[in-house]
Length: 186
Image 1 (cartoon, rainbow, N blue to C red):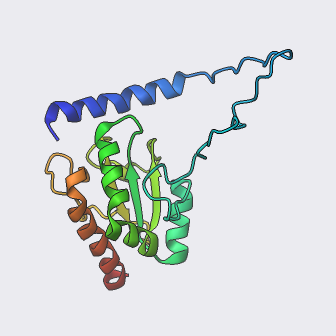
Image 2 (tube, rainbow, N blue to C red):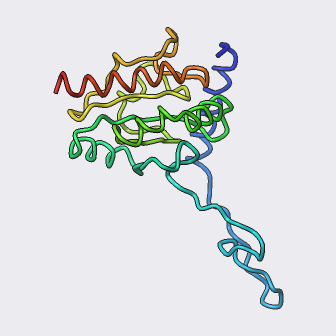
């Protein structure tokens, strides 16, 4: 990723965090009793509504957890490593990585079988999840002892946990390492 694009994603994240803190929920206009308006939650005839899922496009066959705290607890219970994907819905690099990850059969298989999976579009309270910044996308591994594996980094020296769409082989290698470390260290 080029430095100015990195800054762009970082600025998007900062502005989204600032807006989210001050944003008021939108009020839905009351439906006119004389009209045939239907609430937004009901599909209109011939339309298909897609439910919002925890997968957010990263892989529907994967069981995703909802919160970081739930993920840590499930990791300990199942004795599986946790993989946390930090991303933003409107970041083009996050979108490209998401498509590449969802399309890769090996990444999907490892995620489904060997990991507790969490993808988040907001910062988590654990400051260890951003050891070198709040950039996106970034992927962090946490073992069941709740240790963030800073030794499982990507290939970029200025964004250690960043992965781009073309880095799926590197991500799969780190997923395999996380799985092996679990069995050799714990």
